[in-house]
Length: 89
Image 1 (tube, rainbow, N blue to C red):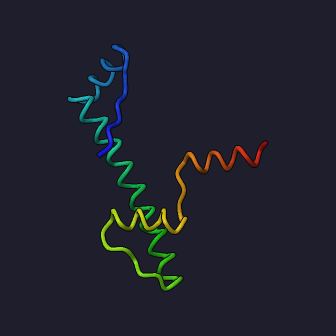
Image 2 (cartoon, helix red, strand yellow):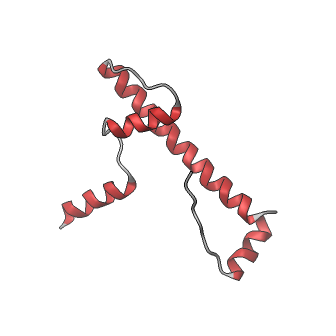
C-alpha cells in the first residue's frame, strides 16, 4: 500500500473545515475516487484491446491494470510528459 502525504497551511485547513466535517476523510475520498475512475478507464482500454487482438484478459482488476501496463497500452502521466517534452526539444 502506498502512502501520500500532503501539507496544508492553517488557512487552507480551516477553509476545508468549512466544507468538510473531516478534511482528512474528504482528501482520502477525493483521491480514491479519482483512482477508481482512472482504473475504470484503464480496464476499458484493456478490454477493447484484448478483444480486438484475441488476447486473454487477466483475472481481477489488479491484474488487469498490470496487464495494461505490461502490454504498453497505457503510460504513466510522467512518461507521457517526458515524451511530450522530448518532442518539443
